[in-house]
Structures are given as structure tokens and as C-alpha cells.
Length: 375
Ligand code: SF4
Image (tube, rainbow, N blue to C red; front, side):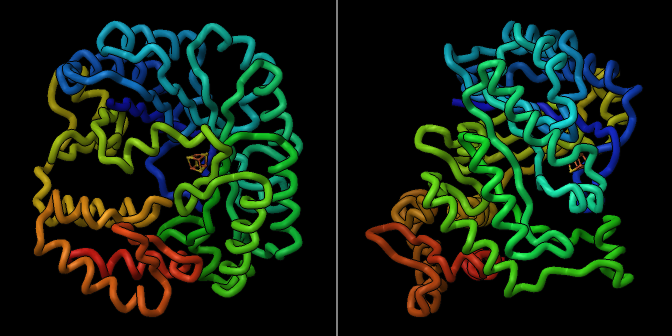
């Protein structure tokens, strides 16, 4: 099983908290689409013995593409790769793009999952983050998708927004559950260096939610997810039964994936590759039929570290037998001896051969992960 990820690095405007590789340059979209198709031809051997089970358009804002642009990308995918009979095919979208005309246009395309970047239903919060949509558009986007028959919809929410109160967070969760979506991704707001939001915080212009309130908001959310039937299958991801993201799960299971487009990452066997993080240079390199990526062969330490970092965030946790079988006794002993203090303090739970984060452990997951990694 393998996945294909396609990066569409364009946004209509920049959100104040975002440090992803995206740009406001719609004039480059046609050239990018051509380059993506050429890249598929150049790299089709990468998945030569694989069945593609997931296809994911991420960004940036994939919902900026036209129907014909999507269709030409799909034509290339289905002619160059072996795609399973029921692949999961997702696109990320901004709520204000998801109007009736948009859905009328894309009905013939094979999408069966939508991931909508709602972040909040609160107009003041959305404005302060420089999001393009308002709360009403967020709700309408989901309802429009449902009216066109989409039955696998994910929404993103962010907690800990400047000035946010517990009451406000509860209200956001209530509105999310009322939409009857199948999957919710939840992120705590982070202040990434260099972003507008980071600078606003440095200048003391915003009211930052403190650590204790952040923990409180996360716990409230966990309880609400549980009460509404959502399984916490990863620290930030919650799904109704049968609706986990297959694409993201394949990253966590270290399956092969091919990343296309500027800054996209690929992974196969023990090799990781990453495409150049410049749309213009990416397009130039592809047009010149040159390699547009760098790669590294992961050492055993790297692979062990990747496994720790990824698996501890999931509800399955770290499989200590997997470590023994795949990395050997030395790595198993290192992991278990470093885990001991967290098991004693009940931040980690050892169930049979699985190490899982407890509720208290989730809040210091980054610390635990770095302690279990070989630096
Ligand atoms: S729409 Fe998404 S990718 Fe684009 S700037 Fe906002 S958060 Fe970043």
C-alpha cells in the first residue's frame, strides 16, 4: 500500500500564525499543474510495485484549483500509477471556496473526502488570524459538502487563540459536533518564529492563553470527543468509527508515499526525499528534467527516532516488540530504561508490549518523545 501527496503551495492571503511553505501567487498555478504532471512522469518508477490506496491534495489551498486542473492531475495519476479500486482521495479546502458553484464544478472528480480548514467559528478570532472566511461560511461549507453527498468530512479547529476563554472553546466544540462531520483535527495554537502572530506576541499586542488554560482546553476537548463518539486515534486527530484518515495513518505506519510539488516529502524503504521549497525553482527544475529533490538514507538511529516520534502520538503507542524485532536489543533497552521514570510517574502506561501516553503524559508528550529518542 502506498500514498500520493500533492502539494498546492498557494493561498489567497497569509494567515497570521502560519509558517507552512505557501505563497500568494495565483499566476503560477497553471505552470505548477503542468510541472506536477511532468514530475509524475519523471518519478513514476518510485511506486512501480505499489498499489496506491490514498491520494491527498494538501497545501496551501488546493480548493483554488479549477476542475480542469484537478482533472488533468487525476488523468496523470490514474494512467501512471496502479490505483486501488476504492482509494481514499482527499482535498484540503478553505471554507469560503466551498460554495455551490464549486461543488457543481467538481462533481465528476473522484474526491471522496474533504478536509476543511475551519479553525474557529468565531468571527473576531478568524479576523485576528487573517483567515478569509467567517463563522457562517464555515458552517455553510460543511452543509454544502453534505448536500453534494460527501460522507467523509474532516474539519480543523485551533484552541488557545488569543483572548479565548473556556466558554468560547466550549461553544466552538458544540458548533463542530452539530455539523455531524466524521473527523476532527484539533491543534493548540503555536507561535512559530517569524510569523505575524509571533511578532504580535513579542510586542505584547495580544492576550496569550497560558499553559494551564491550554491544558484545560485540551482536557475539555478530550471529554467532549469521547461523549460525542469520536475516538482519539492520534494526539490531534479524532474520528467516528471507520473514519480515521487512511492517508495520515499510512505516514504513521511508515508506508511508502510519493510527495509531488514544491517542498513535498517522499518516503520509501529507508530513504527520505524532500522537494525544493521554491515554486519557481521547482517548476524550472522539472521543466529542465532535473532532479528537484534532496534525499538522505536514514540510519538505524534515524529510523528508530522516527518510529518513536510518530508512534507515541498515536493511540496504539510504541510497540516495544516492534522495536526489539526491527531495531534490536540495544534500542529496546534504551527505550525501556528511559521510559521507566515516566511509567513510574504514570505519564506513560505499559500495557503488554505497548507504551502509551496517559492523559497527564499527553501534555508533556514532546518532552517524553525527546527523552526516548537517541540524540
Ligand atoms: S490557508 Fe492554511 S496554508 Fe494558507 S496561510 Fe492560512 S493556514 Fe497557511
